[in-house]
Amino acid sequence: MTYHEDTSRISKSGLDLINKSPLHYWHRYLNPDRETETTPALEFGSAFHLALTEPEKYAARYAVFNGDRRTNVGKQAYQELLDAGMHVIKQDDADTISKMREAVMRYPRLVEALEHGQHEQTYLWTDSTTGAPCKMRLDTLHNNVVFDWKTTEDASPAAFRYSIRKYRYHVQNAFYLHGLAANDIHIDAFYFVAIEKSAPHGVGIYELPVEAINEGMHAYEANLKTYMQCRTSNKWNGYQPQLIEW
Image 1 (spheres, helix red, strand yellow):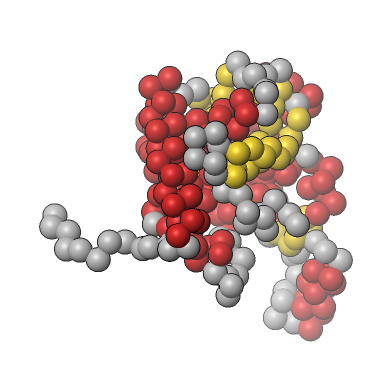
Image 2: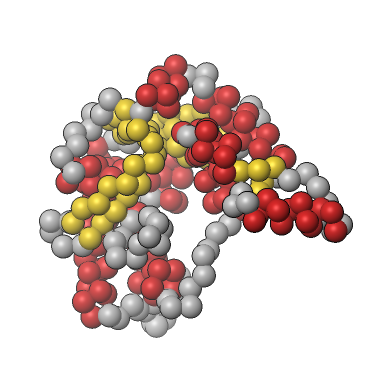
């Protein structure tokens, strides 16, 4: 069973769905008729993460297809790549990934973390307050510092502040620190590294203040409480059917 197939534990992505509504979590993870949900942005992000942290695996797993799938020759060539277990990406995406990686490698501290850190490690634990079984997959851990790589359209401080709220990065920060502590791993710092997908592929490195992390802790604790209540009752409610006046 892969990390994403394991529905016995909740991850940060699951917390986000619980925060939206338990029904959304059920639909994504517990629905017997569920299908793998992905988007071009998620697929691109996955490819970039692998190219950045484990370039050998990226080269072995991804292949560029430049043919024309409207022709028989193109269809056959494309199918052969799929049959070989390759993930197929466009040349433009491969070029962008390469340039983004080059941008990151201009920073010596990031290079050190990429070359000597641990990547894509999975950690499991049980929340001591709610009893919720939890999981996370850490991007990079080096010398007791977490590096979390984010692809973005805008890595500026103002834009990243907006992303923190939109994508609940403060919740991720707190949840991951909690999981690492439960695994007896001491962390000195947690850095979000934002890399722009468009030229000049600017890079921003951010550390959240204690106040934001504490807020994230309260948020994930509330989400875990809701999650466990739903597991116990097997009731996964959606939005409350009540009139909301704006």
